[in-house]
Structures are given as structure tokens and as C-alpha cells.
Amino acid sequence: MNIQVKVDEDVSGAAGAKTFPGSDSRRYNYFEPKGRKATHYEDVTVDVQPDPERYLAQGWIIAFANGDPTYSKDWTKVKSSNWHAYRAPDQEWERTHYQRQSTIIGTTQNIIQNGRRSGAPDRFDKQWVKILQDHLGAYKHVEYGLGTALMHAQRLGYTQMVNNVLLTNCSYKIRFAQDITLYLGELNLDLPALDLSAGKTHWLEDPLWQDARAAVEGVMGTNDYIEQTLATNVCIEPLICELFRSGFIMQDAAAQNDFITPSVIAAGEADYERNLVNCVELLSMLVADPAHGAENRSILTNWLQEHGGRALAAARQLQPLWSLPVNKRARFDEVLAVQLARVDSITTAIGLDPLAR
Image 1 (cartoon, rainbow, N blue to C red):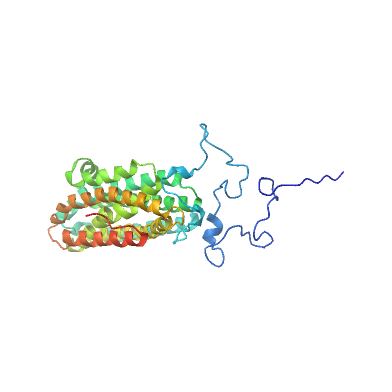
Image 2 (cartoon, rainbow, N blue to C red):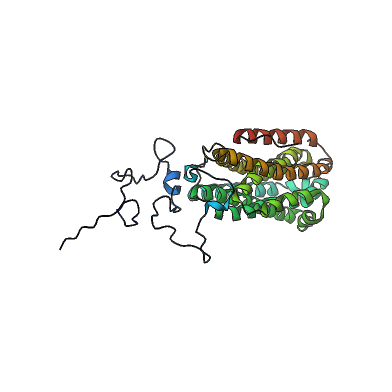
């Protein structure tokens, strides 16, 4: 007997019940690509994470014991008409991320080994060695703290594309904190007097770092993943991280006979450029949302002023660092002005008002 059953395409979860656009194509193209055709990044990222609003007619396959869904739009205050529209400008996915991380680690190791082979650490200015010990050692905790916050944030992102950029951002921060830790350990082989525990002590106790610590812990203390990525990439990165990396270490190191440290730190600068572009694309999409843009803009503005205010206070508290090197090159007021302009350029790109001074 041949029994035919009429299937409602809109509600059935049965395989083959729904006819998708492009289902007769040799390419499995079930989503709308951003360009003329799907990129490799889109093929391996878009809709990898299921969504009841897209192809899951039976609802979430699994849920938490209290009934909460696997993923929820309520895990952030901002709203989007289509979270799945987001695409990361760097188009980084698992394979390309591992490749880039491996390249960075290999390059950093070569730089350090070549420097040690040439006897470079012994030529560092002695005061500069103490600065690296105390303050580069303290700064690595900024990187680790932000990486830890983003590790939490990536689990909450509603789509795979958003998860992906938060996870790569987290991975870069954790790796860079590790880079600094291993670098100081390598220096210790040539400079036995260098105290590897001093950085932690300064992070926990030195008045210069306490506002920076409060800013980082403020990001770690929130449960909103969009707030965490804004606070990290729009506020703390330019006003604390870039201020210290580019405005202090990379500008003053050469005058202290140190060519190794700027090369190690440069990896963090390149990481931030990628993370920033991804962040701006995400936040500007939310601000421009046709249904929720005005409300999102208000929420993002409040977060900007809150976390940006903490980061700016932390930046000003770090000013005495610029007086420590024997051979001074950078001026704090000039460096801070550059970084404030940097924040203004970021907020303009997103579509937000400037950070209050």
C-alpha cells in the first residue's frame, strides 16, 4: 500500500520537508551571502549554530535544566532585527585563526632567541629592566583579564558569527598575556636579578595600576557580552592598552638599548587592529538597525561613558610611568591626546557621540 501524507513545510522538522533557495544547486548555499557568492568563511561559519527561527521548526534541541534555551536573545540588552546578518571583516575562522596564532608565536620566539643570542638583554638600561619587571609584568594582567572576560562573552553570543569574533578576540588576548609572561621568563635567563613575581605585586598593590585594575574588573563583572566587547575594544584598548604599548613601551624602548621588547609588543598592536575592525562592524550594525537602532544607540552610549570614564581615569593615573626611563622620548600629554582622538574616531565610525572628557 502506498500512503501519501501531506506535510506542512512551515512547521515540520522532517528531513526534506522544506525546499530551500538553491537546493537544486551543486553548492550547498542555504543562506544569503554578503557578496555575490559565499566566501569560505561564510560556508564554515554561517548557521553552524542552530536557531529555531532558522531551520529548527521543533525548537531548541536541548535546554538547561531550568528551561532556559541553549542560546537567548535576552543575554544582551541590545536588540537586532537579524543577528545572522553580521559578518566579520577579517573573515577569520578556526583554521585561519590557528595558522595566524602559530605564525605570531613562531615569529616572537625567533625575535627573542636572536636577541638573546646577540647579548641584547645585557645592554638594556638598568632602570628600563626594572620598568619591564614591574610594569610590563603588571600590564600582562590587563591582557589576561580582558581575555577572561571575553571567554565568558563568547559563550553568550547569539550566532556563530558573533561567537567567532568574541572567541578569536579572547584567544588573542590570552596568547598575548602568555607572550609577555614567557618573554620576561626568557629575559630572566640573562638577567637573573629580574623578579618575575614583581608584576603581580604591582598589579595588586601599586597605586599606579589600581584604576586600570578597576576598569578591567568592571568588564569582568558584567554579564552582557556586547557590553564586554564594547568596553574592551572601544574603551580599555585605546585608553589603557594602546596607551601603554604604543605610547610608552614602543616609543621609549629604543632609547634604552632595547630592540626586542617593541617587536614582542607589536604583536598585540596587530591583534587589536583586527579585533577593533570586527567590533566596529558589529556595533555599527546594531546602531543602524532599522527597528532597534535608537534604543541600541542609547544603551551603547551609556556603556561607553561608564567604561570609558573608568579607562580614562586609569590612563591619567598611569602618567608617572612616562617619567621613569632615564632616556625619555614620549610625552604623556601628547600620547593621551593621540589616544583620545583614536577613541573619537572609533565612536564616530560606530555612530556614537564622543566620550565625555
